[in-house]
Length: 71
Image (tube, rainbow, N blue to C red):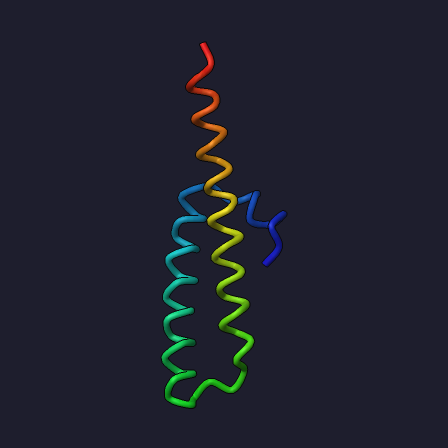
């Protein structure tokens, strides 16, 4: 997932995407623990995608706070 594509989404959509990615990450970890996961790189990819989404959400929160603090 590209950050450019994520920036085009709304904050609500990003929140839903983050929840979905976290469920996928949990699923990948469980499959890895039971030996059913063939491509272990999926775990790292999911973690990085979650981090990208969190970064964009954090940036938006900071921008909103900065706008609210200015007189």
